[in-house]
Length: 250
Ligand SMILES: Nc1ncnc2c1ncn2[C@@H]1O[C@H](COP(=O)(O)OP(=O)(O)O)[C@@H](O)[C@H]1O
Ligand SMILES: Cc1cn([C@H]2C[C@H](O)[C@@H](COP(=O)(O)OP(=O)(O)O)O2)c(=O)[nH]c1=O
Image (cartoon, rainbow, N blue to C red; front, side, top):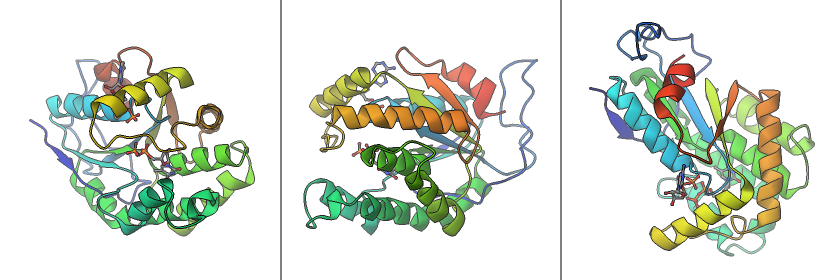
């Protein structure tokens, strides 16, 4: 039986492809992961798209395959001082910090940089490391705030900062969980009513911003920005088993 651990870390990627259980004879498993290097799988999408729900579903599916899974969600509000400052700035504290797209992006990036060693250790010690948001969130939201697209200066700046300068582990796969903006907004509103500590901030309630963000995400996926991407339709129920067989353990 696999294990699932919640962590805040990340790991050195660009790893060789692990060898997983064969698919033709049945579902893929982790029993044949002879290489011993975990797969870094990132879930991206709008606020309320269903990223956490997808991460829960994938983690449960992987556990039934005998895979050990480490998880993290960015921003790590409870664990990192930069993420704590982000949360405060999103609620209007720290003067004009929240209005600075680059200033906020540096804080989000430093949160990830602080997680890098743990992520590397997790990739060495687990079959799969599953992340709810990662570097592409910074690229998509910042570009959307600045009315740029995925080929614009901001996305290049994020790449220079987080990929080149911070040398964060490269994902093996980025999953864009795509839902129409209205669906994401109504799910986020429902979540706000039903879950503690999931209040939407100003950006999450900004429908035109979310729409532009969806467009940048689609472009990033189309470009294969930094890593391979797949786009998953999140309107209905996601088939976790098929996603694991076809993409997560490939
Ligand atoms: N496929 C789905 N169909 C219907 N509702 C969903 C689905 N996925 C998630 N939800 C609901 O939508 C809300 C937001 O989901 P969540 O996973 O927290 O999104 P995110 O992490 O992307 O903000 C939650 O109330 C969740 O139960
Ligand atoms: C991780 C990350 C998030 N964001 C944005 C996306 C969201 O609008 C906002 C908060 O992230 P989110 O995952 O929605 O946190 P929560 O729902 O728990 O408050 O921050 C960035 O702009 N850059 C980043 O690097």
